[in-house]
Image (cartoon, rainbow, N blue to C red; front, side, top):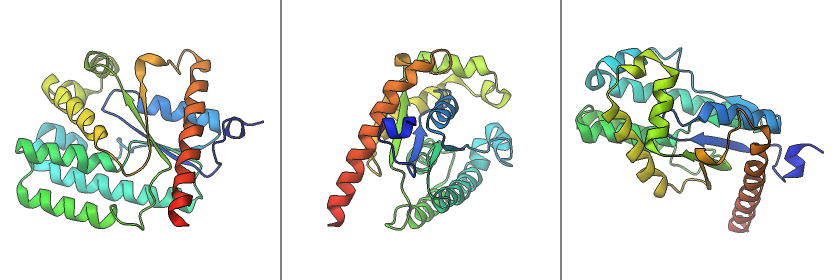
Length: 226
């Protein structure tokens, strides 16, 4: 019996991994995809033409970066559902407007005209009945000290030159965002409770929780349609 069948996880499920930078989204994406024999959908950081420019000048490039992310994530979401599901997705489309664009607007690194243009575009593309929302969003959380330590350890140059205050601001905004998120069911996992890199068995209770959440979600959706 496959793990999907063992834990009652439908073969066409779409699961999105969310959480602040450094929390381990890519690691969890790979671990779940391997366990469930699902495809993966990763954020294409290396091919992003604005990311390096953005880290050097937030105010000039924040709007460009957010529009680029929105377009890429929308295309990826469409592709996932055209394949028929069976995907683990690294980072959600919802974080872009709920955290990043909002943060830049409130901190003055995105002007009001650009922010309104971006949010109107996001609402028209994503916040409609036609947009295919995932079956489950898994939110990875932990202490700021642990997460910041991971950012420093992996040593990406464009992240190392970013002040710690920026990462702390983002961390706090993520915590506020997830408390009010309701576009799809949410499973919260603390990074201190598992180690999927060094302990393969730690994925098992996570799979059990995923199966329970998705089954309950699909039952609820079915009742809403009848």
